[in-house]
Length: 189
Image (tube, rainbow, N blue to C red; front, top):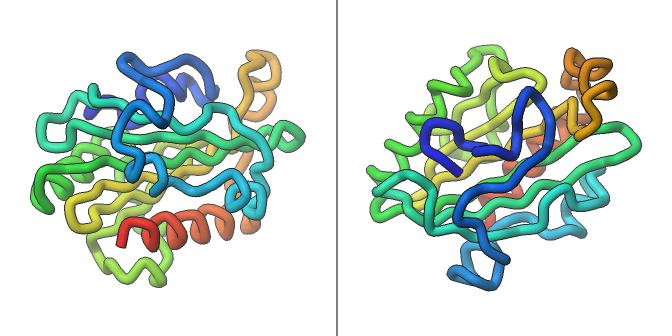
Protein backbone atom coordinates (compact mmCIF):
# COMPACT_ATOMS: atom_id res chain seq x y z
CA UNK A 1 0.00 0.00 0.00
CA UNK A 2 1.94 2.94 -1.26
CA UNK A 3 0.61 6.41 -1.65
CA UNK A 4 1.63 6.63 -5.31
CA UNK A 5 0.21 3.22 -6.16
CA UNK A 6 -2.65 2.39 -3.80
CA UNK A 7 -2.64 -1.29 -4.65
CA UNK A 8 1.09 -1.54 -4.21
CA UNK A 9 2.61 -4.58 -5.85
CA UNK A 10 -0.62 -6.56 -5.73
CA UNK A 11 -1.77 -5.38 -9.10
CA UNK A 12 0.71 -5.33 -11.91
CA UNK A 13 -0.71 -4.99 -15.41
CA UNK A 14 -4.05 -6.27 -14.17
CA UNK A 15 -2.58 -9.32 -12.43
CA UNK A 16 -3.14 -10.17 -8.80
CA UNK A 17 0.41 -11.04 -7.80
CA UNK A 18 3.17 -10.16 -5.36
CA UNK A 19 3.27 -8.90 -1.82
CA UNK A 20 3.59 -5.57 -0.12
CA UNK A 21 6.66 -4.53 1.83
CA UNK A 22 6.00 -4.45 5.54
CA UNK A 23 2.89 -6.59 5.35
CA UNK A 24 2.03 -8.83 8.24
CA UNK A 25 -0.76 -11.22 9.13
CA UNK A 26 -4.03 -9.54 10.05
CA UNK A 27 -3.40 -10.11 13.75
CA UNK A 28 -0.10 -8.21 13.70
CA UNK A 29 -1.66 -4.74 13.57
CA UNK A 30 -4.70 -3.12 15.12
CA UNK A 31 -7.28 -5.91 14.93
CA UNK A 32 -10.11 -3.44 14.47
CA UNK A 33 -8.67 -2.22 11.15
CA UNK A 34 -8.50 -5.70 9.61
CA UNK A 35 -11.98 -6.39 10.98
CA UNK A 36 -13.32 -3.42 9.04
CA UNK A 37 -12.65 -5.23 5.76
CA UNK A 38 -15.36 -7.41 4.26
CA UNK A 39 -15.43 -10.98 5.52
CA UNK A 40 -14.92 -14.04 3.35
CA UNK A 41 -18.62 -14.87 3.63
CA UNK A 42 -19.59 -11.36 2.45
CA UNK A 43 -17.19 -11.68 -0.49
CA UNK A 44 -18.55 -15.13 -1.32
CA UNK A 45 -22.06 -13.65 -1.39
CA UNK A 46 -20.78 -11.04 -3.87
CA UNK A 47 -19.38 -13.73 -6.17
CA UNK A 48 -15.76 -13.93 -4.97
CA UNK A 49 -15.53 -17.26 -3.11
CA UNK A 50 -11.80 -17.54 -2.40
CA UNK A 51 -8.80 -15.55 -1.24
CA UNK A 52 -6.19 -14.23 -3.64
CA UNK A 53 -4.57 -12.57 -0.59
CA UNK A 54 -5.76 -12.96 2.99
CA UNK A 55 -6.33 -9.85 5.08
CA UNK A 56 -3.26 -8.17 6.44
CA UNK A 57 -2.30 -4.97 8.22
CA UNK A 58 0.79 -2.90 7.53
CA UNK A 59 2.33 0.12 9.18
CA UNK A 60 4.31 0.97 6.04
CA UNK A 61 1.78 2.55 3.72
CA UNK A 62 4.09 5.31 2.53
CA UNK A 63 1.67 7.99 3.73
CA UNK A 64 2.62 9.92 6.89
CA UNK A 65 -0.94 10.97 7.60
CA UNK A 66 -2.37 7.48 7.08
CA UNK A 67 0.42 5.19 8.24
CA UNK A 68 -1.60 2.04 8.90
CA UNK A 69 -3.57 0.18 6.28
CA UNK A 70 -5.35 -3.12 5.85
CA UNK A 71 -6.02 -4.99 2.63
CA UNK A 72 -7.72 -8.17 1.46
CA UNK A 73 -8.14 -9.53 -2.06
CA UNK A 74 -10.81 -12.06 -3.00
CA UNK A 75 -11.14 -13.84 -6.30
CA UNK A 76 -13.36 -15.97 -8.45
CA UNK A 77 -11.02 -18.48 -10.06
CA UNK A 78 -13.66 -19.62 -12.51
CA UNK A 79 -14.44 -16.19 -13.98
CA UNK A 80 -10.94 -14.75 -13.35
CA UNK A 81 -12.33 -11.73 -11.47
CA UNK A 82 -11.02 -10.14 -8.28
CA UNK A 83 -12.33 -7.93 -5.49
CA UNK A 84 -9.79 -5.66 -3.76
CA UNK A 85 -10.53 -3.86 -0.49
CA UNK A 86 -8.27 -1.43 1.36
CA UNK A 87 -8.84 0.65 4.48
CA UNK A 88 -6.43 3.23 5.89
CA UNK A 89 -6.43 4.59 9.45
CA UNK A 90 -5.53 8.27 9.22
CA UNK A 91 -4.53 10.83 11.83
CA UNK A 92 -7.42 13.13 10.90
CA UNK A 93 -10.28 13.58 8.44
CA UNK A 94 -8.12 15.99 6.43
CA UNK A 95 -5.36 13.34 6.19
CA UNK A 96 -7.97 10.86 4.90
CA UNK A 97 -9.12 13.37 2.26
CA UNK A 98 -5.50 13.95 1.23
CA UNK A 99 -4.95 10.21 0.88
CA UNK A 100 -8.03 9.90 -1.32
CA UNK A 101 -6.80 12.76 -3.52
CA UNK A 102 -3.60 10.77 -4.07
CA UNK A 103 -5.64 7.97 -5.66
CA UNK A 104 -6.69 10.37 -8.41
CA UNK A 105 -3.24 10.17 -10.02
CA UNK A 106 -3.56 6.42 -10.63
CA UNK A 107 -7.35 6.13 -10.78
CA UNK A 108 -8.57 9.36 -12.35
CA UNK A 109 -12.25 10.01 -11.59
CA UNK A 110 -14.56 8.91 -14.38
CA UNK A 111 -17.71 11.08 -14.45
CA UNK A 112 -19.83 8.27 -15.93
CA UNK A 113 -18.68 5.81 -13.25
CA UNK A 114 -20.25 7.21 -10.12
CA UNK A 115 -20.21 5.53 -6.72
CA UNK A 116 -23.55 4.35 -5.33
CA UNK A 117 -25.70 7.04 -3.74
CA UNK A 118 -26.22 4.66 -0.81
CA UNK A 119 -22.73 5.61 0.39
CA UNK A 120 -24.26 8.96 1.35
CA UNK A 121 -20.99 10.78 0.75
CA UNK A 122 -21.90 12.86 -2.30
CA UNK A 123 -18.87 14.30 -4.11
CA UNK A 124 -16.42 12.92 -1.53
CA UNK A 125 -16.76 9.45 -3.07
CA UNK A 126 -15.15 8.98 -6.45
CA UNK A 127 -15.35 6.27 -9.08
CA UNK A 128 -12.85 5.36 -11.75
CA UNK A 129 -12.77 3.17 -14.80
CA UNK A 130 -9.54 4.83 -15.94
CA UNK A 131 -7.41 2.01 -14.53
CA UNK A 132 -9.28 -0.70 -16.47
CA UNK A 133 -9.28 -3.63 -16.06
CA UNK A 134 -9.47 -2.31 -12.49
CA UNK A 135 -12.70 -0.43 -11.71
CA UNK A 136 -12.65 1.37 -8.38
CA UNK A 137 -14.51 3.47 -5.85
CA UNK A 138 -12.58 5.39 -3.21
CA UNK A 139 -13.60 7.80 -0.49
CA UNK A 140 -12.77 9.29 2.92
CA UNK A 141 -15.00 8.47 5.89
CA UNK A 142 -14.05 10.42 8.98
CA UNK A 143 -10.43 9.48 9.70
CA UNK A 144 -10.50 6.51 7.34
CA UNK A 145 -9.66 6.21 3.67
CA UNK A 146 -11.37 3.41 1.73
CA UNK A 147 -10.74 1.79 -1.64
CA UNK A 148 -12.82 -0.95 -3.28
CA UNK A 149 -12.14 -2.31 -6.74
CA UNK A 150 -13.07 -5.08 -9.13
CA UNK A 151 -10.35 -6.45 -11.37
CA UNK A 152 -11.83 -8.06 -14.49
CA UNK A 153 -8.46 -9.66 -15.21
CA UNK A 154 -7.63 -11.37 -11.91
CA UNK A 155 -5.21 -14.04 -12.94
CA UNK A 156 -1.57 -14.78 -12.31
CA UNK A 157 -1.27 -16.67 -15.60
CA UNK A 158 0.18 -14.33 -18.23
CA UNK A 159 -1.48 -16.13 -21.16
CA UNK A 160 -4.89 -15.86 -19.48
CA UNK A 161 -4.17 -12.24 -18.54
CA UNK A 162 -3.58 -11.30 -22.18
CA UNK A 163 -6.83 -13.01 -23.15
CA UNK A 164 -8.82 -11.21 -20.43
CA UNK A 165 -7.12 -7.81 -20.14
CA UNK A 166 -9.95 -6.06 -21.96
CA UNK A 167 -12.86 -7.81 -20.25
CA UNK A 168 -15.50 -5.20 -19.47
CA UNK A 169 -17.13 -4.44 -16.17
CA UNK A 170 -20.43 -6.25 -16.52
CA UNK A 171 -23.61 -5.01 -14.83
CA UNK A 172 -23.35 -7.93 -12.37
CA UNK A 173 -19.76 -7.04 -11.46
CA UNK A 174 -20.67 -3.38 -11.11
CA UNK A 175 -23.51 -4.36 -8.79
CA UNK A 176 -21.09 -6.44 -6.68
CA UNK A 177 -18.66 -3.52 -6.57
CA UNK A 178 -21.40 -1.13 -5.45
CA UNK A 179 -22.61 -3.51 -2.76
CA UNK A 180 -19.04 -4.09 -1.53
CA UNK A 181 -18.54 -0.31 -1.27
CA UNK A 182 -21.75 0.18 0.70
CA UNK A 183 -20.92 -2.71 3.06
CA UNK A 184 -17.35 -1.52 3.59
CA UNK A 185 -18.54 2.04 4.24
CA UNK A 186 -20.98 0.76 6.87
CA UNK A 187 -18.09 -0.98 8.65
CA UNK A 188 -16.24 2.34 8.86
CA UNK A 189 -19.12 4.11 10.57
